Length: 266
Image (cartoon, rainbow, N blue to C red; front, side):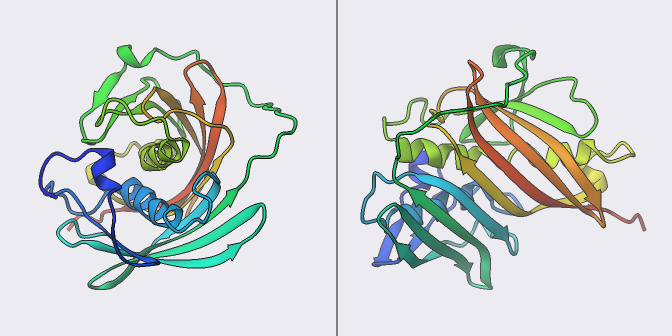
């Protein structure tokens, strides 16, 4: 995959066996594969093994083991942990030539009508996405960083830009949120460091990543990712984040631990 990527192309997996898939990377000349891409592709592999494709994901927990090489395809090996009447559990190990690069556990839950309570209120006293600066790093999603972030906090408006409109499939929009979820947490961790740091001052990498999906939302419409530093010690930082729609509905939560290692000058 060498052309400009879009989300649908990234999620097109080659099925080699009932529970074995291959994902492909765009060739962008980067040192590593974007973590959110691997999260979304592994989740897509898990979804492809569901007996009931309409059963939505409600949570995922994952570890980044080593950087992915964009010049090599990624094998996704799915383990069918459990198929229950209400819940389904899958485990996915992503591998390249050097071994495992990522693993993910995901749980899926059939919808159960019950009370809908959301005590968290979005802090939408921020500029709209049209007034925020565009981050040019990503080719699939449009990321606009909210200015004036306080120490230990980072916020961004994010939506899938390629394609501009996704099909009306709830599972696909959950995959879009998973793809976008790796953009902001490391910024919150870096912003919480007691000394001002530019990206070139340190080595940063996602270590583990979890998402809870609370309510349906469209990944091709603006979502506010609001992340706060929870702890920074031993070169590891942890950020907690909430995801809101433009009208303030709380649709997802995430937690990420990341490595923030200062580069030693020689």
